Length: 392
Image (cartoon, rainbow, N blue to C red):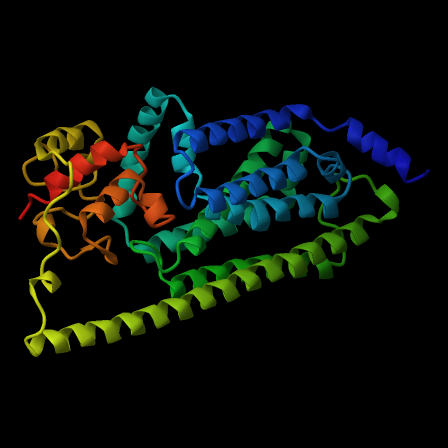
């Protein structure tokens, strides 16, 4: 009974307003899934997004939230849920295309236009530098909001407290986006992702160890003796929470990155063997033009309509495209002589069907790619593909 009384008090203090943005995000995402007609790959990402929303609800709108105001260890568990559970799930979900599809078309296009300058900027910066910036953002927010001054100020102000949680989530998300995209085209390599994880693990471990071995409590804001723990015992427990479960999360992520690195090496070795076979056949005179040229036609595609659609959907913002006025973007690769290319995005055979799929739903073909999903219908994508194949 003594345990049930404080639990009842905690449940009564949960702020239901926190659930509103999470519920809205879920509704918009569900609408986006419906409008996209459940494209391949959406199911896995939808599960990750649903789990992320669930973790955010547990961290911010469950009895853990008011308990975190009383115990530093509960507050640390809350932070850990944000940084090493919700953030990686959001990075794996890559929910932006589906959320855009769930919004009204005008709003989605406006948000896409706002996003393009950021894509231009990041497209011009080396991926290793972006990874270093992401790691720095994570470590700065981690350390800053566990210093006594900012930590206690956040607990005294509801606005600052919300900002603290948003900053911790955003900083961690920047890191996990790097890790989730490891090895993909125009993303950080596996080695860079591992170094970023190592830096994050060191930062979390040092902070956890300092909290655990400190001879005196760092904070005065928590009530002494709350739930039977002294302030120092509460802090030591918080340090262990950051040190052990937090460190385990980074180790698990590193293992998965290494596994992906090994799979990528196996694919490259297999591709090298296939290339050697093709060259052997070609040299022997048994090859044909089909090895040198990709298909040059898209069934039912109209290049003239495709030329117009390129302007309508803003493709010129990111790419240099011959024949299109103002198409001098530098975010994506130039599409000059595209009809003579063998591959799309470096690894997808350049066929009419593949190019149509890539234009219509790049996240389906390569989850996490920097190519934004602009909501191009399949029929319009065929027209755009038909135009690109005229670029010889």
